[in-house]
Image (cartoon, rainbow, N blue to C red; front, side):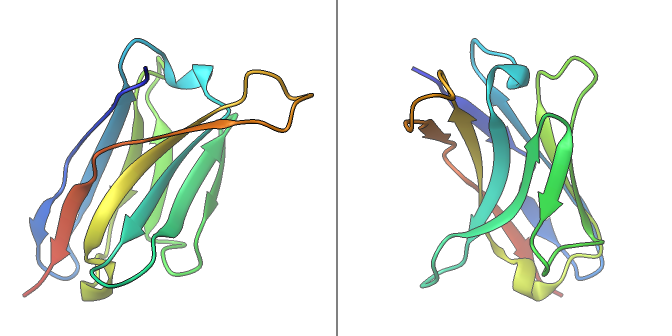
Length: 122
């Protein structure tokens, strides 16, 4: 089974930066169709933050211009660089991997990390 390992969460002041990391045990990031970051605040639904598919990135409007999703040179890890953090960015951040074994079939497999807490507070 795929296990996603996340790290990098913590407590920062508004305007600060954090970098989250996610790696899949036993697989390279390139093995997956899409990698993404989601977040969930207490009492709220989980929302999409950013995705990367074959090197192409997308972002939620709320983080556009502040966050960057990218992989390392060997594509072993996906990162979320978070700059200019705001209190409303406070949430548990989850890494998601999508495996698409056959594009002819309408059946993808989703894998989730355990989540890492990001808190932005004075």
